[in-house]
Image (cartoon, rainbow, N blue to C red):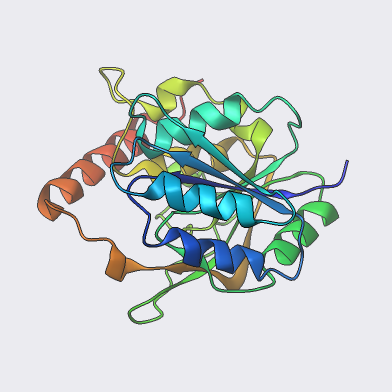
Length: 240
């Protein structure tokens, strides 16, 4: 079966940014990708814009899944991947609905790495902020436990579907069984890196993080909740 990259976007009120996101996918030199938009009960025109994109894509590569309950990003991604029974080797790539790819060769680069190494389960790339080009993505030494290493993964996090399927959901929940809402990127990717047979950092900027679009009503509370999530995830380690 030909490998493709399945970009998964948890979208909540992203109507003003989805078309830019789609254009960055449509400009890819390698057309072997598909895009799944998880509409997380948006109150704006997210579904209308997403549906317009889906119907306009000549290769029918865009799928919309409307949630009937609020899942937030982490649970939405988890549920989608765990219900994906078609191909356990499917490459999943997380793409925020307000961001975009910044390299037209992103899909080609990802597929080249996965095709050349059957043991590769997780790959992340350099990224760039829209305000200053800053990038904090780096390699994690192979002999280092990712729970004990600083967060250096980028916003373009890719992995094979089977890695997420073998991680218990308790790794993504707090002590009361509530799914993490903030700090979800580390809560998701650290255990994936932990269980991966092989992992790799690709030092090419492929993802544009649009920090200018991420206005939060209560930034102080969000930062506190993110800190609490990361602290718990790292302190308790992997839950088998």
